Image (cartoon, rainbow, N blue to C red):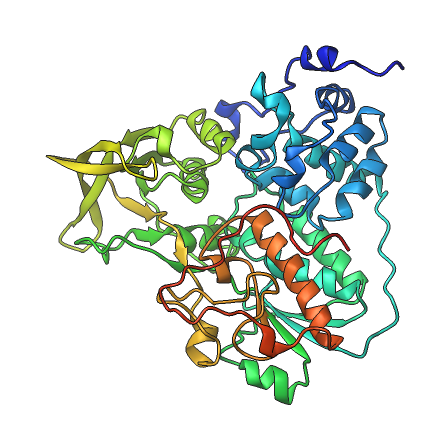
Length: 497
């Protein structure tokens, strides 16, 4: 087949991934996008013009060779494409589904300057699913044991990635997870209609096959401290990947009313504790008929769409406009298709409860946006006009702060005034010798792929530390409590393995 010219490639229309119909999917938890067929994937892959200086790679936090894997799909070499992705990305099926490609790799796609950017995320998902469905994945060879042992605290995307990267370097790895199953936020925070459970389980089983050990129901910082791991359990290094699970609230009157949740609790009850199957599973969930969700990020979209599937009339309240909503474009569009209500420029100021302290209404102030400030952001300003809406369940989706358990029980681990673990940006070393950190613990909350990029950096640092090549005295860990968490820019910076 003759190679297509750039002009011919640019003329090909964007291939939209098929979706389950909104009127049907709101009654189940099946995955919404159904995935590309081989022919659809090959057609979308033909839109990649194979840039000499591909910005998409720079936009990927783990540095996937995006043009290379897309070209392999175009040639019909899907197994090879998946293998190419796995050179730098341990969780391709998950990343293809939940990464904010519109703000990362696809945002820098040259094709996107004149047309729709190439569907990089959809093609990554296609290759990973093909690999899983056709059984083409080959386990990596593990080198001779180094005699070194590393504890990984948390089994979310950062923890799983670090475990993989350390294991393929020959180190013994034990993952400690506070919950009764692995996967972290990918299990308890992301709905099944976005990320099916079997995808996460397969990655965990793969880690077990290459020798990674998992210890569940173990809260590091409570049952065992960092010193217990380093001294008594004889671990040579520890990687903190405990995430950001401390919910933020507004602090308004009525927040303690029955029927008020954080999105973290709401989603965890449903997707980890199986509350939607009560009484078969022991965890109950009170949800009324009129649900208000506060916020417009990805987690808010997950919460809105989950509540809809549980039969409620659901409304999103956000103090800015749709244009400022931080959710992924795709997630916002999918949510808008699902018969939800939207109240932009509404800021909650009070929750009104009945005589039994159950939520019965929410009071909001209508907002307006100011002129852009020096950063270009428009600030919401109160108008003095208020509205009261009848609701019986409220879910706050305003983000989360860093899990405080480990820093609160080990003062050697330096944190800033927001509770974020401070690290050397290049090596992910903390202020405590032998202890590294990554993921939401060092950013205060970010994305799956950014957490993975930090975990890859940390694994390189831990490996060098275990070999004696990285000296603790050289670590550049901020001492200013006002210093922000890691400001992650660009891709995995320690190079490919």
